[in-house]
Length: 205
Image (tube, rainbow, N blue to C red; front, side, top):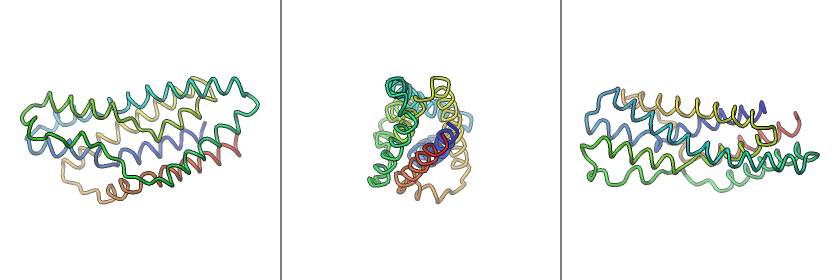
C-alpha cells in the first residue's frame, strides 16, 4: 500500500496542475470581479465535487478489487501489480490531453450569476472523475476497505488542497508555465507513475 499511496499523491498533484481544473474559475472570477473569499468558496465546492465523483467510482472499483482478492487470494499480489502496469502502458501509449470542455461553454449566458457558475463547475467536475486514480482504487481493493478509505482520504486532501492553492496563486497573477506541459503530457506521466507503482508493488509485497 505504501507504493499505491505514493502513486496516489503523485497523480493527485499532477491532476490538480491541469489548467482546466482551475483556470476557468480564475477567468470568471476576474471578469465578474468576485472577491477572494467568493472564489475560494467556489473553488472548494467544485474541487470537492470532483473528489466526490472520483471517490464514488473508486469505491465501486475497490469493491471489485476486494472480491477478486477473495476469489484469487493466492494470486492477489501478482494480479494487482500486473493490472497497474497494464493501465500504465495504456495511459502512456494513448497520450491524449485532459479536458473539461463543459467548463468553458456558455460564458456570456451565465454572466453575473454566481449560483449558475457554481452549478456548472460543480456538475462538470463531479461528472469528470479522475480516471487515472481509479486503477489505484482497484489495486487497493486487494488490501481491504481500510486501505481503500485511506486512499480516498489521501486523494481528497491532495486534490482539494492542490486545486484551491492553484486557483489562489493564479488569481494573484502567479504564472505557472509548467501547467501547460502537464496538460499535454498528463497521460504519459500517469502511465509512468502507474508502471513504477506496479513494479514496486510486485517486488515489495
